[in-house]
Length: 467
Image (tube, rainbow, N blue to C red; front, top):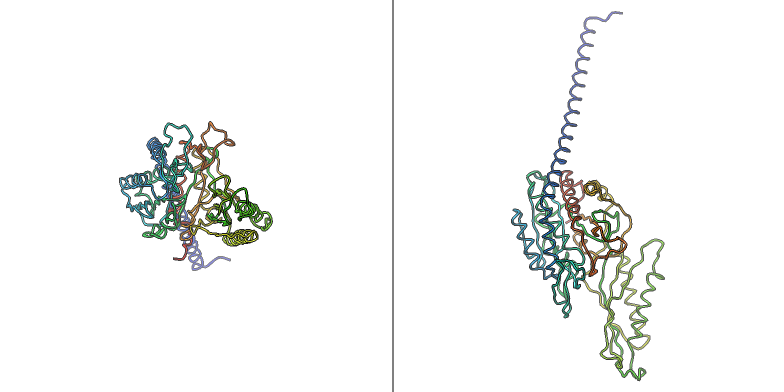
């Protein structure tokens, strides 16, 4: 049957409308694709430009690390180091605040476009360790620690952290017009712990507003360690352990070493307490469902002479746990054991826990997944391995005091020089700890990629913590 004229016209109009709509949809899709491709190209071009800047400044950054390494300073005493950091950041045009938490430095780099705020953190302090590396720029510095003269060394790699972050700041500052957001650089004193009874570290930085004006949407840290130079790693879930410093002073009664029955000898009591404490991980912990705690007595102090039984012995120790609940339980057991064993022999115990606790660390798995591409890309620039782990050790890190306020994430960079077998490499805190300068740029590229990707992706939609 032939269609009427009206039917043919109606059909023709519908076909035209459909074709027009299809053309518009295809064009919209093409434009969206082109826009996305352009965004990716811009980010890729920005990363490439930043990498080129980092390549150019490496000799300067390496020389800077050597200078910092040669002039280490203990916690809350990092006067020269903080001045050096602040001066370089000011020259880059950043807004710089000094004197935060005694010697800390906080600086803000504002990008050319509005967007999220990301924070990067480095430590400033060194350790009371006498360096034995034999490096031409080895530290010969000395200082006072707990009333004693000690050697000072960047035995934990904080000199590398400072140099890496300053390199990142310089590269990003050069390309800030292309950044969609702001970058906050936090240089923290006393990560290894403040001296004596002083406040310090990340907790004091938080208290003094290091995370405010502006408050970052997330904060990141890198830590160097022994391992294949330039390789990167990140843990999903638990990272560092909580770290507590505690003491138990066992008080007996002093007497002649030839007549111990005339007094109360705290020495064997202290020995028995130490052994009993070690039963907590093996006999009082559900090792099927949780990681056991680590209890280590680092110092046993007491006595004046070989033939005098001392009045008291002090046990100076650390506790490492993987959760707040476990921490509370173990601290209670430690005190009960020391108190009851001492009382059984007629002595008594003064048990004290340092209130300056370092919380346990935790990388949120979803957050890790979002950052993995940035780390993989950085490792690939040096043809270096990248590893994601679900296990972690018992080292402490006060960075997680920041993590109580804003979302936080930590990752690792291995720095053992290639001529040293990894199995024989000295660990952090060793007087023989070494950093391969060639690994520094991998850390800088990792941070730079994290910043660019985080800002370009509007902070990955990470939820802010309640203020």
